[in-house]
Image (cartoon, rainbow, N blue to C red; front, top):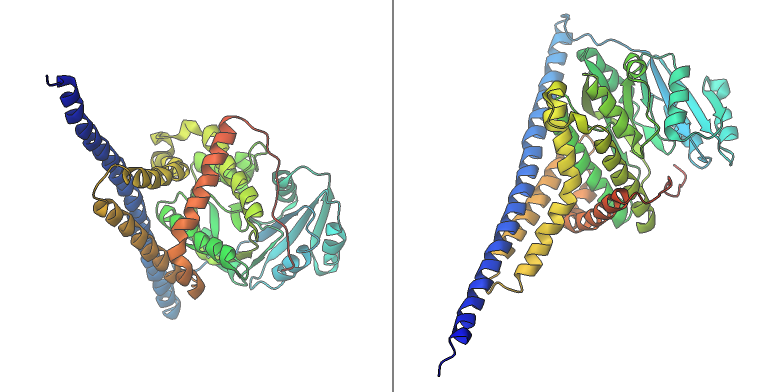
Length: 425
């Protein structure tokens, strides 16, 4: 006698497998579509940004050649603030680089935030060259910056990390940005890794050029750059007084102050020619500490300003800027789903050609985008182009850190501020 239940089960199992394959394919191609769309949006907007910048430079040259008014840039008084905590190794080189900038009117203010080493004595060696050195009890980086703002006399404040150097023309490009847009509240500079040697540092350098700076070019076109980096953040002093200085309650004070400025209705832009050279973590352990703080800080700030999300009251920042940051934070999960689906589908699908082709297309596109980002950067690096095929795998590691940090923040696990080890600049 034929067992009908056995036949029914035999027929149902293949159909279940087909359904599973279809589900995995749907998730895979859905994730692939989102990731590719994100890359294409970055490229198209950054291309427009670069084209407009070249056009502006050309028009500026023509106006000056013909001696016509319209492109005369105002020279602002600028205050450079350097918060420092136990930075005796790098502080002298940092200050020395600030003393050789090609700009007519600026001051340098160093805030020793309760250092236990020789930071104060090293910084004090430059007092006779006009550098202001202030010593205070430890309040954290935002508190040190706020002390500097209160002592600043400039119309524009620029924060610089104590392990960073500025390109000699950085202040000129920043001042020019502010003179062209009276609604501008802040300008994000172009952060580059100082002397990127070794695979880990070159990969971080490529990340700065591609994932960070290419994104800022896109955002700048819409006047809503979401993060002005601590290594070179230029902020209008009057706007800082209006919004209430740097917040003290998150791990991402640079993101936090940018959100406050955007919330107040001001523009925030990016200037690729205002370059800061900064140190980067040399070990996996230091990179892990830094990125955990970044990701947790982003989560804290986005939760703090959730009222801006999709709120037309805040213009482009509310409708596009904040949703983009949520997508940026969630891209770690999307990337992981993308790879997990590919691996899981391999166990069910008899034909992996289409899924593998999709993966290879995304990998090739990421290499093309990385190469494009390097080529349009003011300081292109051949090392970054050479190592770009490994960038996707480096991103997988960062995605893991991002997911871990999000879980830690959700569970409210305590974390203290930790910075990477320093070396002489």
